[in-house]
Image (cartoon, rainbow over all chains, first blue to last red; front, top):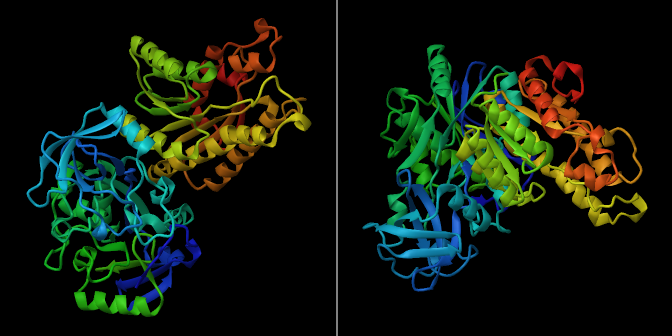
Length: 337
Length: 241
């Protein structure tokens, strides 16, 4: 499948493949018909995390140029981050120069007002480090927004700006890459969804870095991710379940958060859940997602919702129909009931 | 509407009406997110709010810069929580002394629209998303009588404010199926730096004090449940005294 190479391709042309549901056939439609697949009383849960400008260019302690990509929250005051050597986003991550070997206690400098101390170098890969910014939260956040760029993808025609990687309902800056399943939703559709008696709810999930270009490290992803599940959303889910209606997650980040919250307890949590074909879903009845090839880790996540054979069949059909994949591509909705 | 604990984002908060509003609403125990371009007056404002027992956060940014918008909204959400009320107050006259349209540079007109029209459009668009998910929120747009009266030499400012008023009305229509309120308010003439820049020889004794107008805008927010979305209000309306 070909990637969508720009975030600005026409919304009206966006496609949706529906798998499962009341009849188990594959159905192809325009994305704008998404509300028609849902029933009144169903609940759509969105990840409202805004996307950070998580790519920071700077210098290692030795002065050597580096790029650091924030990858996940490690705890309340530190982050996991991935280091790259010199080069820019037009070079595929797997072809990037390695960074100079980082050492614990080294200080990385990104500007006069932004410094990160390395607290830990991961045994998984020397490129995965745990860092803490030396400035106060309000100051480093401000500086990240001043000098940082969103994480880029080498298959795109032009560099992404921060506007390109926000969903229309984004709020707290917790995501390191855009929770891209919601990218095709606009307010025209969301208001139509509400008018049809379908409910909307949100949570915040700190979607982490999706790929690093280093096989050993990529196999280790996703890192544990932070989420915040509001009580209001929990109430809406319980109400939906009690009425026998469906909970539809927009994106696998929402699935991970909802399936991880023990007894659906509201509040801030951290998920290490790995979704795969053996996992039995407890909360979520369907997922809206982008199109992902079988080689991608995302395919594993989707196999929680449908057999790999069915998913493969869907991908073959999508390919034949000219669907586009990756962050800004077409979508699929996989329903289990 | 009870303002206690609400997160209120105010642009142009370092002086004039914006500053007075920040102080007034902080006294109602709202959490203030103050946006302005200059650091020192913002620091002073935060210090004053703190000394009165209130809570505030400051973000240095220029609302006319498209790429400052997500820096503002993301930091605001991180520091103060989801924004309940947005007050689009920042505006510019353009070059002063004010001049006729034939003597205005195209770039000056464009810059006035960036600050008075595109800036608040972008900021509202970015903050409306999370408001729509929760189906609640208020956007208060500060207008001017220059939006309705064609004052000589006020071409850039007046036309940008009229465009902003109409944007407000259309947005209200588009959001009619929601509980979100978006309105504009004409504050009337006030004794501010902006007024002095525009009309240096005005009789200041005849002008309202920004703190009195801020008090009236607070009353509008307190009575927001009775006000129709899309309204264009006057601060001097006796309902808000």
